[in-house]
Length: 86
Picture (cartoon, helix red, strand yellow):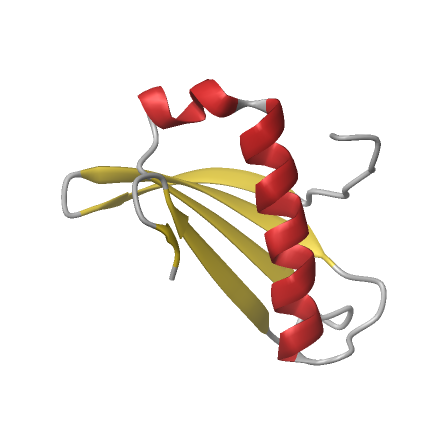
């Protein structure tokens, strides 16, 4: 997307209070902390929104979850279609 490549481990749909979220699991090769993961999540979401602007016809939220290489956790970034980042 936008001339960048992203590795997506899983995509799922989540329902929250009658609203739908599209959730992307983004496995990371290196872990440099939550701030770096948040930056990478923003880059993924920004690329997704610009490449697929019609997503908001169905989904109210996008969630990008960067995962540590060892699978021991990670960091999630939430983007709401009508309000932006949380």
